[in-house]
Image (cartoon, rainbow, N blue to C red; front, side, top):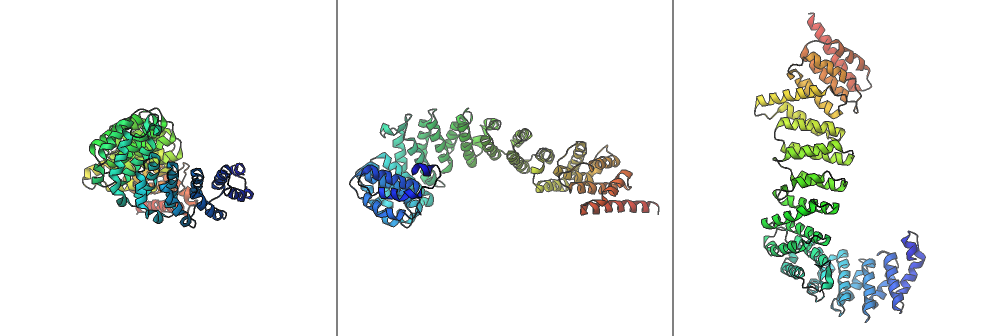
Length: 523
């Protein structure tokens, strides 16, 4: 039956037999019955009700193997309705003479807490006594429920900080039995769980955090053994250090330990290093800037997940002093990648960094031109509008600087008109700028600019409305020139029959402008 269920077939015909086996006297049959029930039934299954009395009876058995079999099944089968019936006998097992029973009872209570926290929080004192259990496995099991309770209400667990610190110190000093060692690392999973608990309790609490600093430094020092489980502890310790009230010396030590992650050939360690640096950056950027080159190198890694995580970190590390370097690197990656999602992320990040930290307006325009060319339709329309507004309004503080900015933009966009393929969003910006400030292009007569735009209007566009931008630019330039060139008139006549109503309207307006100029000329 279990094999059939594992393959995805419905074996409901055998479920009742699994329930019946839990009532057998034979211990092997009973254990198989509980195992099959836990695997095949779900908490809302109608047959779980039939198991409640059997489980209550077996929890009171003098045979600890029978009790353990029941406790293993309870977390899989319990629900809110059956919880009150099973809570008292499970709580009583916290005092059982066998440590394995006490451990599994704590694990069952953890599941009870997940279903209905209020009923378990009434047992706070009992759970705290379990934390002091003479068996480390039982103590370790209690950390899970205490961690969840701390996340729900950290203030209620603050007084346990000295106890957690003391336990962690004992573990790092190898005071636990060697059976808890893994690759000569003392109880690593208990260490990791303790670090998670301390992260929660030390957040924004200087008094609680100060009691943790010494033991956290010891954990970092002793875990630096060059093996994977040591890296796991270091990573969790760094996360703890960045979560609690900050300490400058600890943050520097944590940042130094992370460099080995980022420089590793192992992609998993690199990924953890990037995540750890990201958490350090949230506290203070300066501790991660020393590793800037290592982080940039991770952008060249073939692992897509690592590249995306590195992109997020670089974005957080960027400031006014390194924005040019970082943006150049991001633009080079934008040129080389074909992954649409990654390109979209790069485009968004470069745009935000340029808007936030641009050293001057000309650099911003040049950078956004690159983004428009490389990102194309991935760029948000509001970015183009912001760029046009910047060129139109300038800084508002220096008229000469604003004029120089418009000249730079007009000259740059005139030169780009000769390119055979221009993304629509960039072409729209170019047409608007040239229409407004084309006369500022030194050494470029308006007639030459009009000819270049007339050639551009015949191109194929991804967005039909882009041609409207070109015609609008032609109209503005014709008004500045004071006469209607023949080539421009041909464009207006050709597209008056366009199916795009707005396009036809602009062409009629352009033709009418030319007629008015002729009439004015002969008056």
